[in-house]
Each structure stands twice: as structure tokens, then as C-alpha cells.
Image (cartoon, rainbow over all chains, first blue to last red; front, side, top):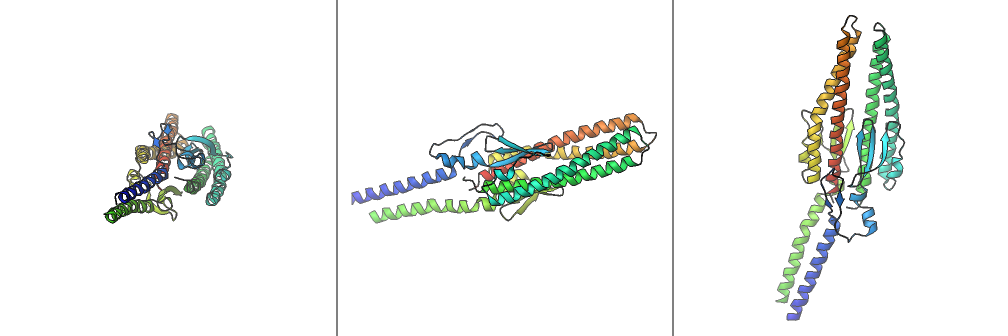
Length: 181
Length: 154
């Protein structure tokens, strides 16, 4: 009788221990410093190399914009792995190749980014020409037209760039979805 | 006696397992992960695979981002950084654009004081640079906030 109770207790303790252990691995809660500090320490050495190489903390992507371009950042420690934007050619499709939905969104980003950069760039050039004409000969009728046309093209280009970044955000959302947590 | 003990053990296991399963379902990535969606100057935070709009980003009737991401402390820190920069950035950029309009208008007037045009141009560049920088910082913090929030989902 006593041995049965002991056996039941032992089995219970083992099952409980295994459950708690599995939950801890599933959560993979690393000790993370304050965001932006750039320091992250992952506690617990139970994870295998393949687990950590596909984990959200190490692999998840996001981006940060800097005056018309955007740095693609990987992981909790904020490693910059590439830059996209004004005529920058970084292969986002290849980066997110492991997720088909992400690849579709990355393709849409590429198209929007090129269109936005081209039209926005031409608009900025037209605006500058308009401003120079205005500065040199104030009575020129072409200068307001150039300024308005340039401004309009810049706005149109900005809309495309904006739409492109939405696609990029969506591409990373899909890519991050397929990572282990 | 042993049966009673077994029942207690099974009961304990069921009780400790069920809330975890419910929590996991409640906080799944597919249903709850956030991202930004922008269209013609209108930026929204959308949730999940079906893209339900959680709220729009705006100066006057914008969503409280810190409240949306309150489950993740790191996300809340970044959301506050967003809120600290977004409003001043938008206002400065708006004033910069008004100043640009005024500068173009002033340059068309024949006998306008050259000093006014120059002053307006400098103000335009200053306001747009300052506002753009603050807005950029705001959006970068917002992206980071959503990244942290999504990280803490199952």
C-alpha cells in the first residue's frame, strides 16, 4: 500500500516536472535588457543550436527609417543586416524566402519602392529647379508651375513609398510568424 | 487511499494544464500579432491574419498605443517613446509645410522684402527637419513596440 502511494507520488512528480519543463522551453523567456540598450542575455542552456537559430529573439525582423531609407534589423540585439529605400537595392525577397506570403509582400514592396523613389526623386528635382528659377527671376510664370508640379510629384512618390513600407511591414509580419517562440 | 491520492494528482494536473491552453489560444500570433498599415497618409495598427483595424494613428483622435501593447513591458516603453515624439513631430512638420507655402507666396510678390523670404525659407527647412526627425523617431519606436509585443505572443 505504502509503495503504491510512493509510486503514484513519484509518477505525479515526474509528470508535473516534465510539464513545467516543457512550458519553460516553450516560453523561452530570455532575460532582456531595456529596449534600445542593445544588450540581451538569453538564460537557460537547454535550447539546441537549431532552436536558437530559428527563434524570434534571434531572427525576427523589423525596420527603422532614416530620411528616405530604412535599415532592416534582425533580432533583439538590433543587428542591421541591410538598407532599403531611395534606389537602394537590397534583396528583401531573398531575406524572407522561407515564407511564401512574405515573399509576395516583399515583391510588392520592391515595386512600390522603385516607383516612389523615381517619381519622388523627379519631383524633388523639379521643385529645386522651380525654386532656383524663382530666386533668379521673380517674374517667371513657369516657376510656380514647376514648384507645384514638383511638390505634387513628391507627394505622389511619398504615397508609393508609404504603401511600400506597409508591404514591408506585412512581409516581416509573415516572416516573423513562422519563427519559433 | 491510493485511489484518493491518484484522483488528487489527476485533478491537480488538469487544473494546472487548462489555463495554459486557454492563454495560448487567447494570445496566438495569428490572431493577435500587430503591424502597421499605411494608406494615403492614414496609418493604422492592424491585428492578426485578417487585419482587423485596432486603431488609427493621429494627433487629435489617435489610439493610445501604450494601452494596446500593455501586456508587454518593453513594448509599453517604446510606445511611450512614440507618444512623446509623435505630436510635436506632426505639429512641427505641419508648420513647416505652412511656412513653405508662405515662402513660395512671398517669393511671387515683386516688392516683398527679401529678408522675409529668406527668413521663411530658413524656418521652413528648420521646421521640416525638426518635425521629420521627431516623426521618424516616433515611428521607429512604434515599430519596435509592435516587435516586442509580437515577441511575447505564443
